[in-house]
Each structure stands twice: as structure tokens, then as C-alpha cells.
Length: 194
Image (cartoon, rainbow, N blue to C red; front, side, top):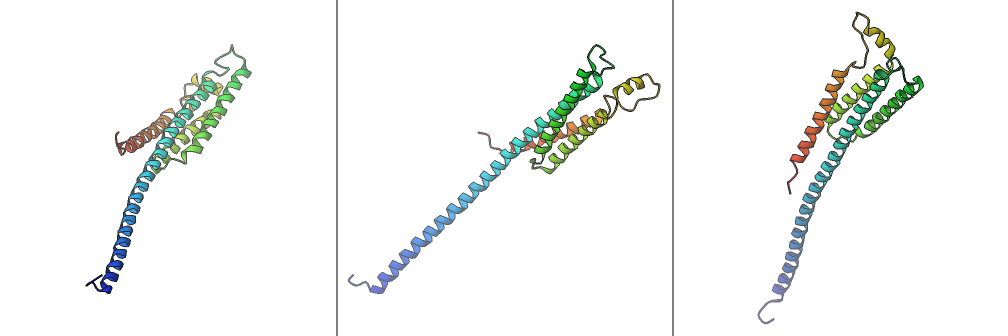
């Protein structure tokens, strides 16, 4: 090391070490930022998949609840012993009881799943639709179809029958379907097309 002072060699060596450390620090920082962006994108994607899965499932459960309510109304009101004298009354009552149990089972399934819906507006409208369906079934279950038959012949308008609250219930259910569909479309609109 002729002509190069010793201190210059030490400064160059230390400068090289600092440059290497700075480069490694910047590289690590860049990778962390990149990983954070990827993990945030992955988290957003997983959240959307979770939400889509549960929206589709809740949509099916609302449909099932509505169908079970329709079966119950049909069994209780449209195939009641007063209307089907050829059938054994016990069989008819068993079918009504079975339809009611299936309805409550579908209601339990929906109630267990609706809490997983992330969007507050969707969850509120689904709960409102389920409540309307429950109220209708409860009202119809507490009333007697034979009394309804008698009221049909009464000149006064009847109060309770198989179509009680049907327009309001259908409106609530349709609002739930509409908001679920809109949220699914919104989630798919944000996804890149491959």
C-alpha cells in the first residue's frame, strides 16, 4: 500500500461496510413493503371470498325458509281435514306438524348463518325478511283453518287466512334478495377478470 495512507484504507473499508448495510436495509424495507401490499391484497381477497360464500349461502337459506313456510301454509290451510275429507285426519295433522318442524329447522339454519354476513344493510334486510316470514307462520299456526272456512261464508271480511300478510312478506323477502344480489355484483365488480 505504497502512497495510500492507512487511515484512507480504514475509511474505505468502513464506508463499504456501511454501504452494504444501507443497501441490505433498503432491500429489506422494500421487501417488507411489498409483502405488506401482497398480504393486504390477499386479506382483501380472502374477505371477499368469505363474504361471497356466506351471501350465497344466506340467499339459499332465505329461499329454503320461504319454501318451508309455503309448505306449512299449504299443509295447514289448503289440505286441512275440512278440505280433504277423504284423508285420515291424523295423517294430515302429522304432515302439518312435520312441515312446521321443517320450517323451524330452516329458520334455525338461517339464524345461525346470518350473523356471518359482513354488510350491515344486507344483514338487517335478511333479518327483517326472516322476521316477516316467522310472524306470518306464527300467525297462521295460531289460527284455525275451519274458522277461516266459516268466515268465507260470512259477509264480513275475514281477518286471518292463508294469504294473510303475504304481500308484506313477499316485499321483505324480495328486498333481501335484491340487496344480496347487489352486494354480490358489487364484490364481483371489484375482481379482476382473468
